Structures are given as C-alpha cells and as structure tokens.
Image (tube, helix red, strand yellow):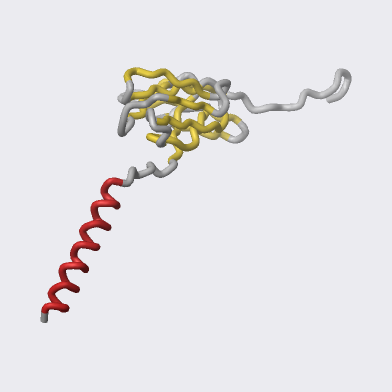
Length: 143
C-alpha cells in the first residue's frame, strides 16, 4: 500500500513539474501575413516590449515604432517582404510576411471589357484609378 501511495505522489509530482515547465516556456507567435495598401498604414500590437525590428525589404514596407508594444507598418510599393520584432532576450514577438497591394482591402474593382476602375466605397464610392481600354490605331493611310 505504501508503494502505491509513493507511486501516485511521484506521478502527480512529475505531472505538476511538466505543467510548470510548459507554462514557463515562452510561446513563439505563429507567422502571419499582414496586408496593407501602398501609401497606407496599419498598426501591429505586440505581446511584449520590442527591442529589435527587422524589415526584409525597406523599399516595399517601412516600420515606425509608436511605443515598445505597438508598430506601424507603412506600405511603400507593391510587393512582399518580411517583418520580425524581437524582445530584449531575442525571442520573437511578431513576424511574418507583409503583403503590400496596389489598392486597399475596402476597394472594389469594376471591369468593363478591357477597362478596369478601382473605387473606395463607404457611404459613397470614390474613384481611385481608372484605365482606358487599349485600342490599336490604324497606320496612316490605312482604313
């Protein structure tokens, strides 16, 4: 009976130690894709104090630090780059791909034949871009 009691106590002690070790281990945030339109900005909240910020291609996106727990990503030109934020011990706080698009997520593109127009819509729609269909001009002297 005494051996069984010792075995049960040892089992629960090991389980408690495993749970405590798992709780103490830092969790790495899963990489994610952050989307921002060129010329627009978005905020990224961090789960801790950032010490280092790394941007793969600063010609595609730039990062400003609002405070040690908030970043602002500015889309500069269309493309894909990466962004990582690390704490003082070098552990990742945030990271993943930054996708910079040519229009915002709230935009609508209307295709009319070969012509496409982009609109930003809220209570009313405002034209962002418009492209004219391309037509070939006949050479001089030809019908």
